[in-house]
Image 1 (cartoon, rainbow, N blue to C red):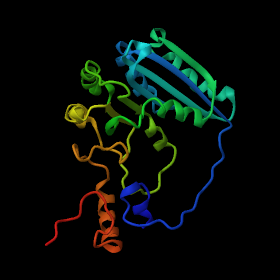
Image 2: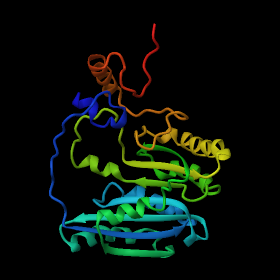
Image 3: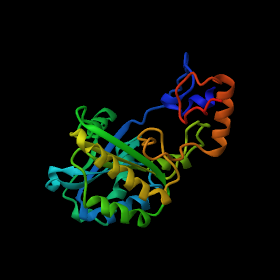
Image 4: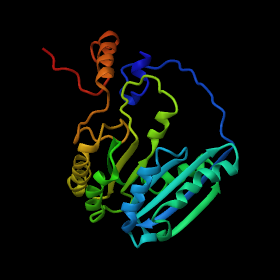
Length: 273
């Protein structure tokens, strides 16, 4: 059952009654730099992040959303965080991002700030996830060149939904080269992760923004290797989230431990009869 639990999240077909926690030493320094651009710098910024994203130990979060700083037009926010043993080591990691070709066009910067994960989490959640809003999200993993992704993003930027709608991108795939992950059930990973969120108020706009998210993510499908079961849009855009080998193993585990489909899961149970 362990292979089915790891990575399955709320669709795991079982009840966890015990788990073991392995602790790792925490890095002594968490340091963050942030850069802010108007959307006319988008091509240079995203291309740069695709270029350096897998050769830096720093964690990258590149966000696009409407913001007062850019007169309520799409704003690009590049947040990079170094986890290091010393401030000098953290500064060295973050200095790479001062070489971005769009560096001199930044509206504002916030550089080399020693911080903590709680503060960084507030940056990422407080303004972008509002309980009163209606949301739709979709996502993809990719190793594509940004040249392939740019035409669709260029179209998106011309009709960006109201705040706090956003597109975020991470270089989570950089971790893949450091250590082999344990086998996981729903696990399709790649170099970069993109998640697209639309947020709105009026239920009458549900179809409009559902289509906006779904159609733009469909346009990126030729360059996607799968999705993560986190910001998924499976009702409107079913897509690959498990490798073929893992799917076979998962089916065998379910047949053994939950043959009657007692637990709700995805994909849906086979038709009866």
